[in-house]
Image 1 (tube, rainbow, N blue to C red):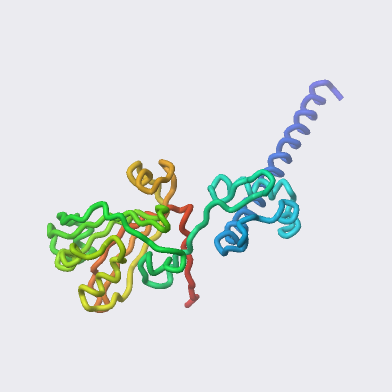
Image 2: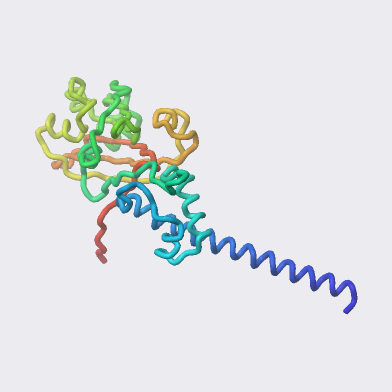
Length: 262
């Protein structure tokens, strides 16, 4: 075989070897991500009540994975701040996510009442001229004033969400003297209006935290947060509460029960 042909053949074999190596790395990364998803769900469901995960060898057997894959999966969870490696102990849970249901209309304190006490730092309560999209959604006249409330919400002292709320002024004014620090706005709305809440339109998306949001939530700047936009109506259909709620994604997990209807 001429030298040039041998060089081409060797180069081709090298390219094949590199491609195969990359494919194996991608496959291992895929499997690690899949395992991390399963373990994250276990963490959410308190499957490790003593706060310590099984040994890597045990996890490898339980999930039919290699030890390297298990280590990669645990690395992913460490990067999320959910677990940490403790010398002489193993991998321990250092943070948890709280389940926030999407199949019932409840305030944060109602949703997380079994987890502890939710407190609110009321950062702003002020009448403002309603921006056009707010006026339209709350069905108030263009340029009308609405009550704007900004709250930082904590569970056990840990920041969970930053809530920006717009209320029609005729209802919002009655809330000015209310205990916004310890009571969900939903309960206050029902008390003030004498009517139960009926339904809410929601949109949930991931957004990048701006500098202000990151600082208030004590999250890394530029981190992704879950942003829930919710327009809540009274039982008679009147829209009374437009909220933009930014949750720390590393502390909240959204869940719900969906039925298929064709």
